[in-house]
Length: 385
Image (tube, rainbow, N blue to C red):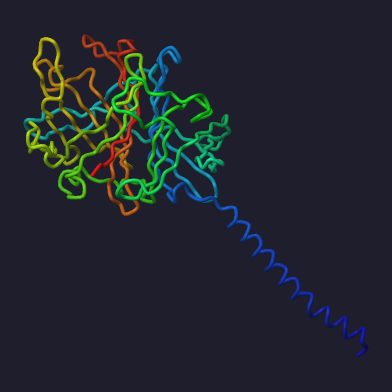
């Protein structure tokens, strides 16, 4: 065989090998690029419960406050989706009955109320992307509706914290969500300080626990599980009411097991009571300031119930004097849809929630149109010990 022929035969033998090597190199490069393009999950957490809204002065939005409560799910490809419930003050959402609180005396047997729509699955949804800004904020941009149709881009800029609370959660907050409690003059973030649309307050907690019903702590567990029943739950509640934007405390200095931890308190050894149906808990809370000029100090009645699927709970409370001798108060009570916070180990760590309180006329039970007497706000309520 001539030298030329031998060279030709060698090329015929090696060219396929070179092609295979080239293909392998290309695949490795592509895989490397994919790995390089992966986006870190916020605080390392994929599944979040989040409340967000707009609470502003009536001179700025004429009582067009709104609140939204739902789930954010992040993926390492840089995408994020949300499903949510939302309520707008001008729509005057109504209170509706859920489970019956048959807890026994001294807790009145009443149908626990929530805000209309929360009994059903989330009706709102968005798709988007997320990234991190130079000042280490989490930027979430919504650009599609739940079905994938284009919408005007809306970006939220969140402060991101890690290692929060006993469960090592991640947390996101708007710039002025936390601050002095109580306060009747909460700083309202300037436009674009928190979002490029109307949202100006928000709070959320993330973990890698499932967002499904299987991750939700039962009402019985809240009462009887030693991890949950002997610690107080407190938080921040930013609310638009009476023409102001204020900050109040959420929760309080009480535990499910013993009521007040203080021996001198009238609520010491006054625990929350479980409902016979297992779906709710109730409490007759003493000396709460529920009074008027003509009525002595009365008790506040509180309930928490589980409804529907996912992480859903609802809180409901009212002053006993308003019932005017009847068992239950049907009118201007406080309905608070909530989602449970659950850490990576599956341990319950409190709630995020919203309040959507429409003022109704007691003569008719229908919306009065008196927006100044409404309450629209968002809150967290988490363990402090």
